[in-house]
Image (cartoon, rainbow, N blue to C red; front, top):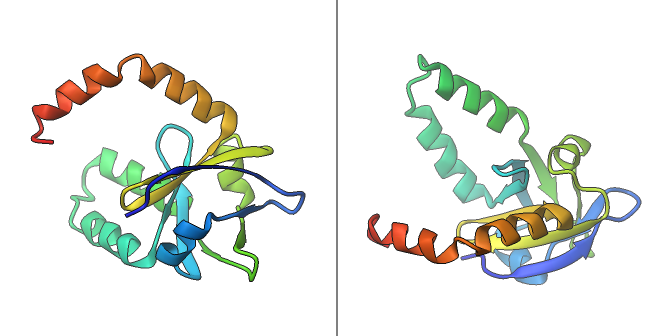
Length: 143
């Protein structure tokens, strides 16, 4: 399970350091794609496979399914770690997530998310004010 929050920076070659705790679970090769809320979702291969299986079962005759799959899958890239634990973030994903320099990498259970530091700060400020309300609404879902 991916947990925690880490601050890093994008280097001049578009590389980021993946936190050591995440490297073990991601493996040497993993998938990154457009996430929700203008961040990048990162999945280990086995979790990506699970997502692909679920997507195959969706009705492609629905326009919303086709639209989501096109955006989600066309933005996906297979990334590899170098010996220093770095990977190059593709330009299309950096642009999508508005990543220029400072980044936040967070663990969110089955995936890792990569955020621009500015977007993460805005998101947490907006969500923090309703954190208790969100928690209460999750009780209805059995969490």
